[in-house]
Length: 211
Image 1 (cartoon, rainbow, N blue to C red):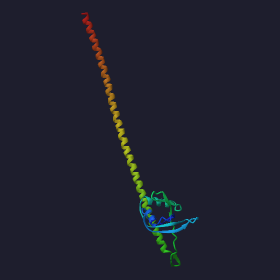
Image 2: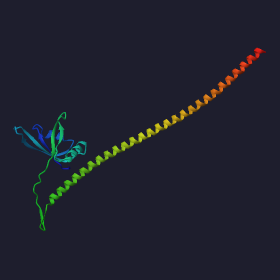
Image 3: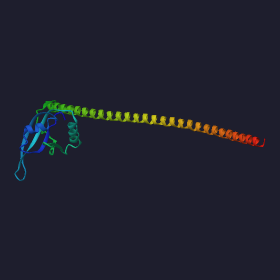
């Protein structure tokens, strides 16, 4: 995708080179733009537009465009534009028609070295771009996994802390329950002693009364 041209199937005549460059300024550095005059069955004129890039930017909108175009090369994608981004162009990869090139003939074998070199360079550039995109996606996935692991660890720590708190409260409850039982026993002893004292007091009153 390093030198991949884009093709706008239909652009209005008022959408000139400066307008198109402004729309695609975040996609990369544009080398040149070519306009192809066209018209529909009713005679209404419009332009097909070929956009050649010197280099692409590595950002989210380029990654999304690259993904959509490479998912199915025969299916176009949409590029939104306009003051409110409520208009869009139908955009596809522009398929270059390679001109015939001279060949080197040696030992009755025809080898198109220029074509091989250029195709190899294009493949290398495309692979480099794909690797960079994949590395970026991998980095995002690793960050996502690390964040999930951190969230899981924090949840485990909070759950462990809550469990310890519950266990501490259970121990405190058991202590209070033991204290309550001890107080009950002590209270029973006091009631018995009070009953004995009341009996002794009654016996003493009776003794005084009869003596």
